[in-house]
Amino acid sequence: MVVATLDHVDMRGERGQAAVEWVAVILVAAIGLGALAAVAPVDGRSLGGLVAHRFTCAVTRACDDGDDALVRAYGRADAELVRRHLPGFVFEPGERQLPVDWRECRDIACATAADDRDLDVHRTDAGRQATVFTHLLRRGDHTYVQYWAYYPDSNTAIAGSDRLWERIPLAQLAGKALTGSTQYPGYHRDDWEGIAVRIDGEGRAETRVTSHGHWQWCKQSRCGGRWGPATGWTRVSRGSHAAHVPLDARPTGFVRAVTPVPTGYRYVPLIPGRDLHERTTTSAGIRLIPLESLPRRAYRRLDPDISPPWEKDAYHDPESSES
Image 1 (tube, one colour):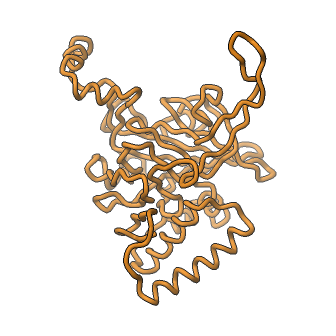
Image 2 (tube, one colour):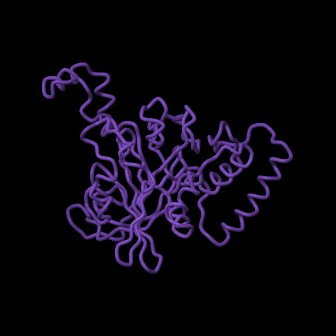
Image 3 (cartoon, helix red, strand yellow):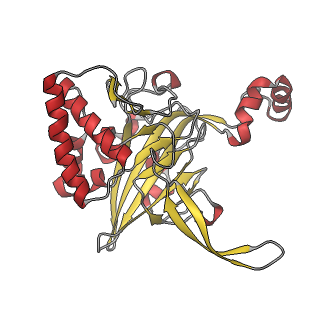
């Protein structure tokens, strides 16, 4: 593993030779994290990203994870809870944007990073740190942590429709005849996507994520609206940024018919570096900003039809079916 630029980690292998002092830092971190892994399940990509991020921060002293702001907003115990349940992001090939701070970046030019399946990236090419906004609620004996990711735009890419639109002038003309505009109909500015974690009184956590105005757990239709166990990862679709928890749904049995029908499913987590060969942003390097601490009047919509998190039903009702 090598740090290519600040918080850009190439997972392909080592290149060059580090100074003795740097090696010592890595060894100390590896020993400590190795002990942690012995008592807690940590996948290799998350562990590697954590080591690399902490190492980069120690050397450059240029990292701001937002943890002090979390403590001021929520208190130390809840701040640790919010940080602990943040998943890492794995991006579908072709998706170049990272979630960013809308106060610093509202254009794709400052939100893009290399589209390289071997990278663990925490900063855009323009130097903007991957950022996620948080919101904490309590309803009865449940605690809800919401993580809201902002992308400067959304470009629905189902079945490669965006690429066809770019290459076929007739499609643009047909679109203009129907809508009066040659702008791709799946495009809009300001894209907010959410990850919600629900924690019960016993400390058990479930999660769901946003997808096209609603919530889901896995990508399969049977996961629509459902909460399910977290795996430590959320997968971001190319273009639209619709999310799902990456899982492999394996049938547990079949009923005989003309075509065998599954009787049930067992869900197996898909982990980057093991099951998915895609670019990641591990949670350790993501800056967290509590929405409770920001003045809402400072936000200006760039698309009148796209609501910020605090205007969504789910922001106030964490069990809402709409996002």
